[in-house]
Length: 464
Image (cartoon, rainbow, N blue to C red; front, side, top):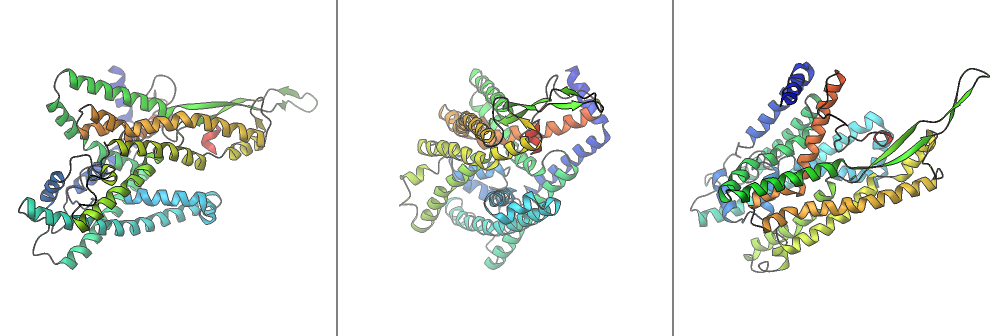
C-alpha cells in the first residue's frame, strides 16, 4: 500500500503528467455528459423502455448500447459514438494493404502522407455517419410505432415535422460523432493514452456498475464470490497473453575496433526480434463481429416488412442472439480465420529479413535473405495458432459464462471485445505513465521488467 501511495505521489508531482491526466479526465467528463443529452423531439426514457421490452439483453442492440455507454439506447447526441470513426480507420487501414496510392501515403510520404490519411479518414467518417444516422432514425421510427402500442406513449413528439426530424437528426448525430472524434484526437495530443480507444473503454466501463449491482443482487454469497474470482483469473490470463512475445535471437556481425594497424575484432552485439503471439490484437474480433451484425440487419428488415413471421424460429433468428450455439460456433471460426488473415497483412517476414540484412545482422543458423524470411514466416504461423484459438475462446467466453446463469450484462466483461479493449487500453495508458516516471528517475509501475501495451514491444520489431 505504501508503494502505491508513493507511486501516486510521484505521478502527481510531475507537472506535465498531472496536467495531461486532468485534461484527459475533463474531456472524458464532457463525453459522458453528452451521452445523456437526448436528440431534439425524442423521449429517450420511453425509447429505452421500448428497447428493453423488445430485447432479452442478448441481441445486437445490447452490444451497440454497451459500446456507447448507453447512449445508443437513450437516443443521445452521441448515440453512434466513436464507432463510425473506427469503421473508417479500419477501411483506410485495409486500403493501405491493397491500394498502391494508400501504400505510398503510408510508407513514402512521411508526415504529409499521414496528414492526408487522417483527412481521408475524417471525410469517410462523415460519410459513414450520415448513412448510419439515417439507419438509426429509421430504427427510432420503428420503436415509435411499438411505443404507441406497448406503452401508450410516443418516442417522437407528435408535433414534430417529419422532414425537420430527419434533417436535424442526421446533422446532430453526425456532429456528435465528429465532436467525439475531436475529443479523442485532443486526448491523444494533449492528454494521456490513445484518445479514441479511451472513449470506447469509458463507454464499456460505464455499464459495469449497473451490471455488477444487478449480478450482486441476484447472486449473493459464494456464487458471486466465485464469479469475481473467475473474472480476475480470466483478466489476468488475458493480460499475460496480450503481452506474450516469442523472441527470435539475432546476432550482429563482428566489427573491428581500434586505430590504424591495431584493429581488434569484436564480437557483434546480440539482440532479438520480439514477435507478439497475438499480433492482430482485437481487430479479428471486430471484423468477425461486423460480419455477425449482418444476420441481425436482415432479420430486422424482414420483421419490418412482414411482421417477423419469416424470420422467427430460423437460423437467422438464432444468429441475432450472441449467446446461441450457432452464433458462437460461426463466431469462433471467423475470429480464428481473421486472426491469420490480419496477422499476414501486418507482419511481413520479408521486411524483417531486409532490415537484418541492412544492419549486418543475422539469425544464428539461418542464411540471410530468403531463408531468414521463410524461418520468420514459419515462426509467425506457429505462434499464431495458439493466439487465434485463444482469441476465439475469449470471443465466445461471455456466452459460456452466461450459460451458467450469469447475468448477460455482467457476462460481457468475461471476454469478447469488451475485455480485450479494456486490457489493451489500460496497458497502453499505464505504459505512457511509466515512461513519464522513468524519464524523471522515478520507479516504474512494476518492480521488474517493463509494461508492454499493444504496441509496446522492444527490440528491432518496434522500429520497423
